Length: 463
Image (cartoon, rainbow, N blue to C red; front, side):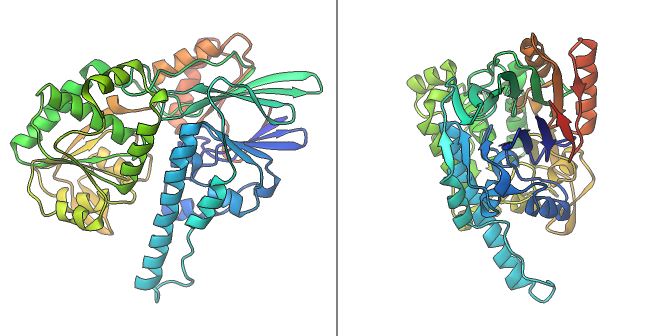
C-alpha cells in the first residue's frame, strides 16, 4: 500500500492524495491548484494519474482547492462514487456549477475580445454540464457512520469544524487480515469559532495525513476579534470610506456577516450599509440555512432569540452585475464583502480597482492569501499592485484580521496530532507552504511524534 501525493504537497492548494491499495485506488480530495496562472492551467488540465483508474473519491469538504477539479476527473474517465457529507454535497452543487459558469464566461470573453491574439481558442477547464455529470457520482454519508467505500475499506467521517459539512476522514483498511487505520485531516477548524461545532478527534490511527496551513503561526485571540473589527469599522466610517472585504463565499462570508450582526445588535458599530456582492454567497447562505444540524449551540440559541443570523435590516445581498457596478459609484461609509477570497477573480477585483488608491478606504483581509496572488501582495502592503493589468498605488489602509481564519493554528494542530497518538507510526505533513510544514515538523519531532515526513509533489510513500 502506498500514497501518491498529487497535490497540496509543500503548498496549500490543489489537494489530491491517491491511495493505492493492492489493486484498488482511492483518491482523497480532488481540488483545483491556485497560483501562477500558467502553472495553474497546466496542472489543473493534466492529472498526474489516470482518472479512469480511480475507483472511488472521498471528499473532505467543499472548498474549491479540495473539490474544484472533480468535474474534470469525471470528464476524463472516473466512474466511481464521490463520498462526502450531506452539507458538502449541497455546497458542491452550488460551487462546482458556479465555477463552471465562470470558466465558460471567461473563455467566451477571451475568445471574443482577444481572438486575434490567441493562437488557439480558449477552452474552459470544464462546463456546467460536466459539473452536473460529476454531481451524479456523489453519495452522502453522515458523520460517525462507518460505511464501506471499497472492498476492505471502511470510511468514517468526523466533524472537522472548518466549514459547513467539513470532515476528518478515517479509513479502516483490511487487506487479507492486515489492518491499518489512516486518518486524513482535510482542513481542520478552530475551537470556539462562531457557527460551527469544534473539531472532533478520530480514533487513533497508524498513519496520519495532517494539514499545516498555519503550522508555525498563532491566530489572534478570539476574545478580541469583535472589538478589533468594531475599531476598523468605526475608524473607516468616520472618514466616510469603504471597507472592502475579499472573502471566500463559503464560511468566511457567513462568519463575517454574523459578526457584523452581533456588533450592530450591541450598537458597537453604526448601522452603515453592508453589501454581500456575490451571487455565489447568496446561494451558499441558503445552503447554510438548510443545515442547522452543523451549527453549534451558541448559534442555535442566537437563531432562537434573533432570527436569521445571516440577515439584518441594513444588509443587502447583491446578485445582478448592474447593482454590483453601481456600488463603485456610491459614497461611503459602507462595507462591501465580495469574492474571490484571494483577489484572483470575481467582483472584488472591480471594487479594488476603484478603491485602493483612496486613503479613506480600507481593505480588510480576513483569510489566508496564498503565494503569487493579488491578495498576498495587498496583505504584504506593497506600494503598487497590478489589477486588471494596470499598476495602481496601494493608498487604502490594509488591515489583517487572522482571528477570522477558519484554519487551525499551530497550537490547534499540535493538540490534534497529540490526541491522535497511541498507535501512530507515520505522520505526513501536507497542505502547507514549505516553511510552515517544516516548522511544524520540528515541533512534532520535539514532542516525540514518530515518523514525521513532508512529502514533495509527485512523490510516492509506502504505508
